[in-house]
Image 1 (cartoon, rainbow, N blue to C red):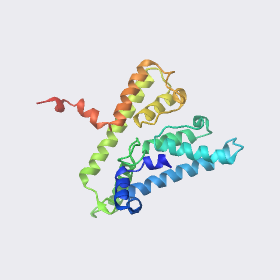
Image 2 (cartoon, helix red, strand yellow):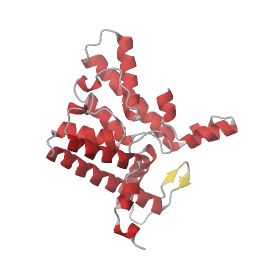
Image 3 (cartoon, rainbow, N blue to C red):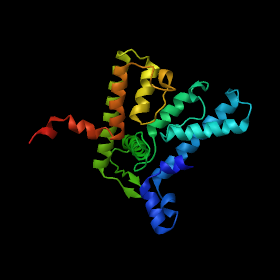
Image 4 (cartoon, rainbow, N blue to C red):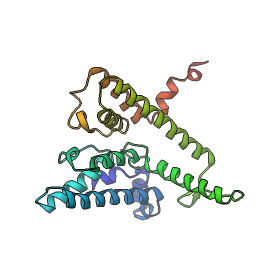
Length: 240
């Protein structure tokens, strides 16, 4: 419960406390998407574990499934079991859930739900434009129109995130890490998740020192939302 609450925009907590009402929660599009994603990930995890796992205690299975799903998806990083040993696609699905992360303005990492929601709405709008080229479609969040500048900024962040992720993964693979370990390590550090898969499923002691330095930088970039550090490497920033 506290992991879910920590993944909610703290502005909503403030408004709910100030107004002594839960209405700010129910009218927020990002929160609805966030809770829907959490629910879907937990449901898929529990159903798949009930079919394929060797759990004998159903209560423990549901507790582990729900706890791990919420912990990884909100980038909290706590573990109650070795989820990396779960069958089939489950570990990778949880890892991909961490890319979405929690809400903006929360303690969670990842791309953030509101960005993913706007990217999804932008994709839908482009499909509609192909069907109706002369129509005007406005993207809205919480029934308020979103400026085109904001949409462009989110696309810029997504492009920078993708480029940085690919760069770090290639560097780690060049240092000797296998693809699964490199991918999950970058995902865990850039999303500020913690545990990964492969050689970094339990700890990072087994990887080489160069890879650790690279991942330290990845953690900084992830926590500072990438653009903050990229600005420092821009020549324009240092010009008088």
